[in-house]
Figure 1 (cartoon, rainbow, N blue to C red):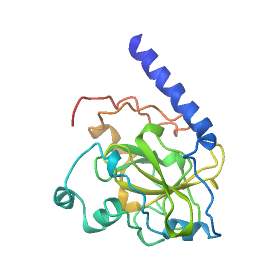
Figure 2 (figure 1 turned 90 degrees about the horizontal axis):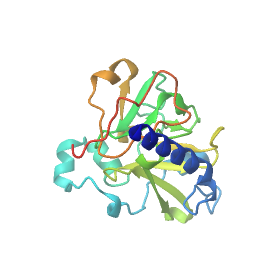
Figure 3 (figure 1 turned 135 degrees about the horizontal axis):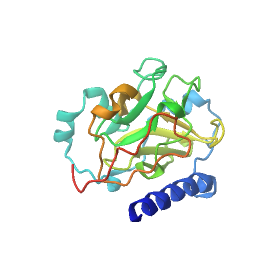
Figure 4 (figure 1 turned 180 degrees about the vertical axis):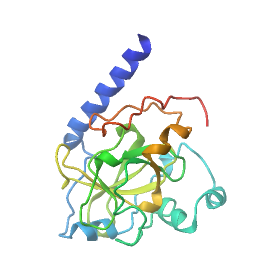
Amino acid sequence: MKTFCTVLAASIAAITTLIMANNEPNSPVSPDQPVTDAEACALPSHADTSALDAFKKSDSEWRKILTADQFRVMRQHGTEPSFRNAYWNNKDKGLYLCAGCQAPLFASGEKYNSGTGWPSFWDTIAPENVGRTIDKSYGMTRVEVHCNRCGGHLGHVFEDGPRPTNLRYCINSASLEFVPKADIEERDLSFPMVLTRSPFLETGIMMDKMTPQSSR
């Protein structure tokens, strides 16, 4: 009963976070100068997320874990080319994990074609897994998003997405690891942070098997 109440409370908190996001000062904001959706996604990020890096590793350690492209995007806040990346047009069902620490970030049921050439999602699996930081580079105000576990740069989030959230998470494929639906149960998908089930998660891709653990 205690576990059930804990999960229920976390789920309610996740839903409340989604509803209140537009009223928070860190919610996605429009650019200060007019740019297209693709242009806003294409610009690198200069948001400082180093203080949020709870999964501490040195640059030399990250270079052993990540490919050169992944390191440039995730640790140096770079941006990969549009339409020339692994997942922009991926239609397979499954989960998208952080390429740096395998924290669950997005599900295929929340992915849509935004026309920008980058993987786009209208929601996260759990709000606490994706952090936000205001990015004021290039004469505009954007909201940079990163993995809340390792601090790896993911992309940006905008307020021009589809219902029910009206959000567009514009994410670099290099920041993601895709796990097909058929392989989910074979993976050890457990994390030291509490994972709530997204209220809009695609039927058939359940998060119940992911349980917290003290270390990884």
